[in-house]
Amino acid sequence: MASRIHSSKVAVFWWVSAFALIPVLISPNQNMDAINLVKMSALSFFAFGSIALLRQINLKKFFSKLLVGLVLAYTLGLTSSTFAHEASFFSEFWGAQGRNTGVLTLVSFAIIYLVLSLSPGRSISRAVFLSIPLVGVSNIFYGLVQFLGKDPIDWSNPYSPIVGTLGNPNFISSHLGLVSSACLIVAFSWGAEDGARKMVIIPLLLFESLLGVFVIWKSQSIQGLLVFAIVLFTFLLAFVIRKLNNKILVAMILLFSVATGVILSLGFYGKGVFGSLLYRESFVHRTNFWQAGLEMLKSNPFFGVGIDQFGDYYRQFRNSYAVQLRGPAVTTDSAHNIPIDIGAGGGILVLLLFLALQAITLYCGISLIMNRRDPEWVSIGIFALWIGYSAQTLISINQIGVSIWGWMLAGLIVSRYREMNLQEKLQEKVENTSSPMQLWKILTLAIIGLLVSLPPLLQDRAFRQALASQNGQRIIEVSESKPDNVFFLNYSSLILKSNGYKEKALELAKRSIEINERNYVGWRMIMELSPEGSVQYIKAVKTLKSLDPLNSDLPKI
Image (tube, rainbow, N blue to C red; front, side, top):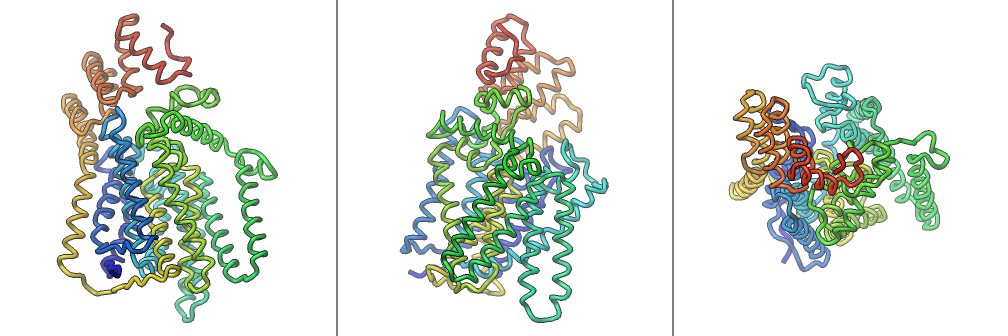
């Protein structure tokens, strides 16, 4: 049976909307976490709705079977990991407060990847890629506003003032690295076009790219410059390889590229010829995070420590060098390396399945470059952007607004490979309208996805309102409400303690460790609120020492 995949103008609109909206959506006047919760809801909305765009799957092709099998196995592995731990189901399903990269987010990314991989990618790829300059304008403009000190939103931000709609200088820097490089690639493509429009469009694209690089520089984050350089280098390298017929010369160019990457990588750690120029202490800290994540995976190889639960285990698995560099009080809730984060959270099988999806995407991208039958620059551009995104995943956090582009670009690469190399006849039906039944299916599934994601967003909003009301009873009620969230219990306990309500603060602290026995803040609160030498005090100290064995600041018993 031939594959029948819905690829109408509605589908193109759906994907461009997801690509454009998820990175920029924020809810500053509604939520304590104004960045991640609303992005998770939008991601779930678009991911579930996209399932309706896939009418039938042709499983007679081995490649399609492989894709579906890997994504289903990956999803099953993530779900199985959730039920294999003592941590609250809710914290693994929706993710840690302030990150929200739990099972729902990771599965939503996988759904988007699969649906796009099995879709006719030509029209979608072109529409998505050409939308990047338009999408990027919003965060470039907002970054300039923040740089000038005119931000209308009073962010609680200890970093550079330039955080865009992503909440952190590193995230906005990486995002704009993709935007700025994409502008140059689009300008390059327009240079080969005929017509007077290019005389207007090309200068605008060059100006936008320049502004993007300026905002990256002022954000004080080097990640965006790295992404920018890697994307352009990959694009130019792919372009040159396509023009060459000499395999030996191509091999030499690739070998030189790998050697250059190794030399630059050493430079970030203060080694090699570029050490003095590129060294960043933050990269040294990241290696400590990676080491802790790998130790988590080594100690929990089958199911990991729990999806998005890195923060609960970091103190236990960090090394003495990490404590020496920054002190025992400084911790993290992410490995700052997405593959290690996924492996630490889900175990070796989940990590291998994730890496398999990345390897398939890489293979498809390289095949597209080597396939000279594909005349479109879009395929090369999308592959170059995905390489830039993938490079930053090795040194950064899994942020929804950044990662959505990576997973969508990956799906489009696989789709273009299937069209060009496997010669699958994926008929694109570009229609002005879709049937009402099809639209209802999309909307129904999208609403289901939205409803699944809403509980933590609504609870976060209620807690913000309770804090604004300064009503202690209301704050306690929200913190004890479902879904279980130790962050709100910890927050409320601290408020009550600071205002002299120690008995209630202790009660909430005890409730928090019932939900999550590894809640370090809860155990510390119990220690501080218990009489020194009491059974409760001794138990709290012993537990804290087991959770943080290298912390010499903890009292001796």
